[in-house]
Length: 114
Image (cartoon, rainbow, N blue to C red):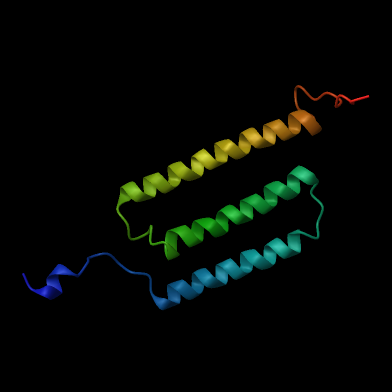
């Protein structure tokens, strides 16, 4: 076994052009975040729009810069599972927020201490 065959791999690596395209997409999402911050979608709507853009940006970073694209499929499965678990936690947080301050099923006026 020669040293050259031991350290070679057979997956496609992202080219410099690919990294520049991802960088451009991240910059577009950043500008989109700033522009959408001037619009009012309501408190929950603003949070959801910002979270959606952040998830898109994080997905690009994880897929390309953290090399999930070139990793075994089990790594991709773990990453997707982590995102799903995070989404579940966010949904519980949003449900709790809506129940306390919004139009949730148990929306009640806050109890005043006096």
